[in-house]
Image (cartoon, rainbow, N blue to C red; front, side, top):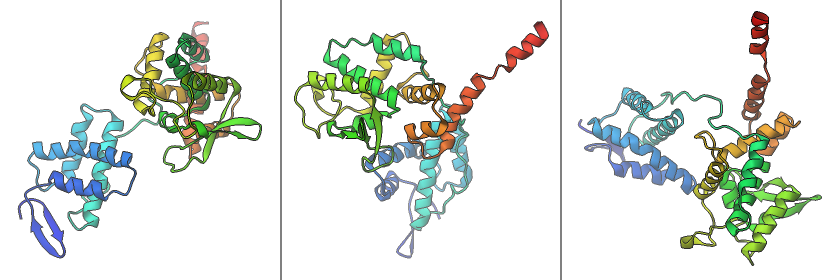
Length: 312
C-alpha cells in the first residue's frame, strides 16, 4: 500500500504522505501550555522538511536516525535533542491513535554535555556591569533593578517577565518576591529581596509613576508597547546590551549567565550545595552539584604541583 497507512474507525485508509495536516492534528492533541505546544510545533518542522526533501512516504526507524545525524551537521546538540524529542512524541501519538507504529521508540537523541554552556561573572565583573548603567533615566533605573534582582536571586527571564507589583510581599522580617517558577501554574515559591535590591526596584517604580498591584513589576518603555509586560527576549537583550556596554562581550555571556553567577558566588562565599539548590529552586540537587564540581576542579592545583616537581 502506498503512502501513510491510517487506521480510522476500524477501516484502513491510504494517504499519499505525512501531511502538515496530520502534524497539526498532533499539536492540537497535545495537552500542554501554549508555549510548550509552540515549541513542539517549531521542533517538528525540520522533520517534516526532511521527509519531503527525501521523498519519504513510509518512514522507518533508520529514517529518524538519518534525520538525527543530518541535523547534527549544522545544529548544536541541545537543538537536535529538541527535534528528536518532538519526533518521539509525534510517533508515540500516532501509535496511540492507531495511525502509524511508533518507529521512534528507543531512538536516542543527541549526546549533551552535562556541563553548563554559559559562563558566569566574577563579583568584580558584576560590579562593573551595574556601575556602567546610567540610572538618571527611567530605562536605566529599570535595567539596573532587573539585573540586580536577577544576579542576587537567580531568577530566570521568564520569572522576571511574569512578576507583578503585588508579588512583592512581606515574609517574616524580610521582603520577598513570589514567583511563578518554571513549570508551575501558581506563585508558590519566593526569593528574598535584599534591602539594596528592594531600594532599586522601589526607585524604578517611583519614577515609573502610579501603577496598580496587578500590573507587571517591570514594563516596556518602547513606543509601540510602552507600559506593557516585557518579553523574555527583551529582558535577555537588556542583559546582553549592558554586558557589551561594560566590555563584557562574549558569546558565552548571556542573561542566563546571571543565574550561573548567582550559584557560583553563593558557593564561593560559603553557601552550601543544599542552600544553593533552594536558592535556584532545582528539583534535583545533582544539577546544583555541577557548580560544586566545577569549582572543585578550579581549585585543584595538580598541574602546578607537577610543574613544580619537574621544573623546581
